[in-house]
Image 1 (cartoon, rainbow, N blue to C red):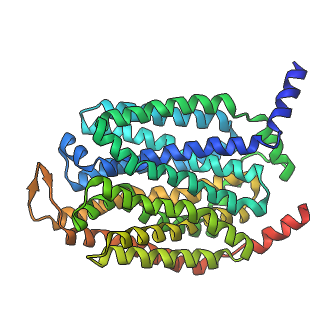
Image 2 (image 1 turned 60 degrees about the vertical axis):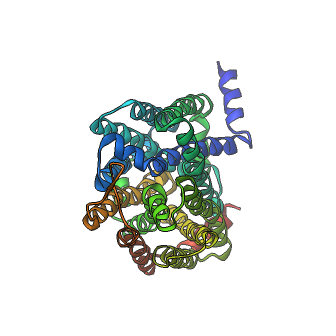
Image 3 (image 1 turned 180 degrees about the vertical axis):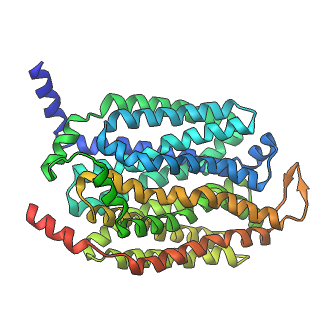
Length: 433
């Protein structure tokens, strides 16, 4: 028995193993974003099948965020205290089952419950990835490695646009979601079979003595003003790409430029590709510069300008719209640096708790922003119905989507109140070296 345990310990400490765990966590993130953005390429089908309006569709899509936000309140403490392997495997399984059940239902109430199941499971993805990153990699590598989270996540979002749109048109939205559900169940089995918790705890003690997660420790995280500023910054910065790419960007581009669903999805996917590149790139730049706030400010300003041009300047060539959406996504990638700042501002043993708090900003703003855009659309609706669906004009979309540049502007202002701890983490890295 002891020989078997020794062999397992040797395997989990092998140099390639941390990379393997991160790849598996990346697959979880990929899957999360496929599920999150999937309604954006099914808007007409869902409105027809469930007989709902713009705000109804927004609320249905947002049940993902409602469950996501509530779960974020607990997921950090759970992953700090209990088995990452078991909890994350169960989370993936719940998301997969939710997708399967959503694909089979004909009732909007049931659809909301199953969509919430997807959000519940998905709530573990980001925290799971960043918790493992905080433990397995050096402090001065965290911003870059955590930035790769955006790459995995946005590749999932890209797949959830044009490729998934093609599958929906070829096989129907129900078959498409059923396939996504089965894929999630398979991923859950792989995660449980490969990930081990033994070496996870051992590597944490290599960085810092493992402490018990107490209410006092959690309270220290909650009362830290820096953590809350980072939470609101993160939510305000990421929500524009989640709302535009996850639901309302596709119909806006279809109406504004008279293009097909697949063409619109292809353009929207460029914002996710930009975020996939911008996350690790801007994280690496912030590591090298040692000035995280400067990079975050630069990214937000670039994203704000690019999105504003797309929303408010009609008649742009399609290639220019695509380029601007790519730039928009690249700038949004700076929001990933907030997790590095949060980790550097708190003890390592509370990494998942801090990350979950910051990540809850996405759920907070995402939960009401998609329905809010839908509500503004409904308020401007002139009563026109085409093929049983409420028809919204180009101007209606511009008015409703004005919420997104406002979010980015407020997020940029918040940066002036956040402390930069990069010098502190560099000093820690020099001591460890």
